[in-house]
Length: 287
Length: 261
Image: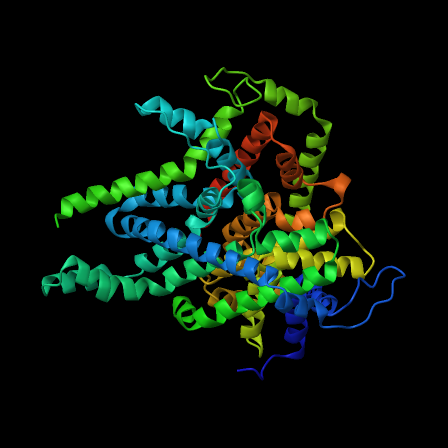
């Protein structure tokens, strides 16, 4: 079907498409290429200092264990947050999609994903208010409980996990909900009438059919969490050193841009690997 | 297991999640009306932090800058995105699928990576940091959202209407303006609101691209939080969250976030 575009149509097509894709080229694709180039330099090529092409920045990742350990720490954080989002969000999506009907469902769905479209930085900050020592959570719990409890979760790994789950939970609920909603109820009725129990229906019908949506949600959570730096900084304090914060430091504090570029590219490789591994399932989600 | 019990458990689960999602935001908002600068309880109502905001020129300027950047971003992203969506909808050509796939990197690659890459590139071409760089970055992040939302609306458009208009003698511009655009207007409005939200709430890319004296609101808040926070930040944060939630509520009237309609 490629052949038959009249020359005039081809011109119109180009006129409509070029601005958007030119913009993406200048703002996304050229910068990524520039970063690849930078990651292979010995020094920034702006000043008078001599620079040459080198693989040292990548070697730095493999020669010392510091960066690899931090990357692993970030990946573990990503897995933890993703798992929590899936365990909390999938049942929620199921309740919304299969047990609530009509306008109530629409309203509740909107309510669940609305926070996701509000400022993530502000939401992380709101957890700092709640979790700090002598904060609302501590005072509140002590008002209810008969014994004194000491909850200062601020500047700890649980605080980071809570904040990140809060940030990304709506992703899993959104994608799972859309997948679950698409399952024909008569399929479930048929299974039930043939004697399948609730667990069997869940394992053999609901879960397999909604898996693409669930996986899409999990990927959408995992990818940004591995690259997160603002959340660990605010909620983690001193324990909040992650792979993302080290990259941030290279650009805003230490000014070792070539090393930062190399570390960013290694992160990009991890992200692409995750996308490649999950793409067979994700492609089913699009269909 | 009892079905009734499961239904109730499900409702409780959903309710608990809503509490989890909204409680910290509400507490933050509440604390912005608390007189104590150290978040001390018991609660004592006061609007002093909002008054302090009004007197804080730095925050006012940052807020104005954020809104301006979001408006410019919205305009550019909506026009370019709508044009691209119409092209992708109307014409069949080789490489179309590839062009659709190219929309994903801005969404799927962590902003930390795109943000630092933009910083390097804009320095490399001699432009450096600043508001123009921030706008270029924001438009790139917002474009895919506009294209996805407008394309979703276009998918419900009957292309034979265009043929009919053409058969009646309308030129391509006339067809677009009188037939296509009116139909997809709700999609364009929703896409524009998404673009506004993407820009107004954007922190990571702005953080790397804005000049120190030239920060957007989220960047200013981040710097302030790291210095130790005051209820003034609660007040400005509360305003931000109310604004972006309102924008999304309006957007929801025009688009169902990919859901049914």
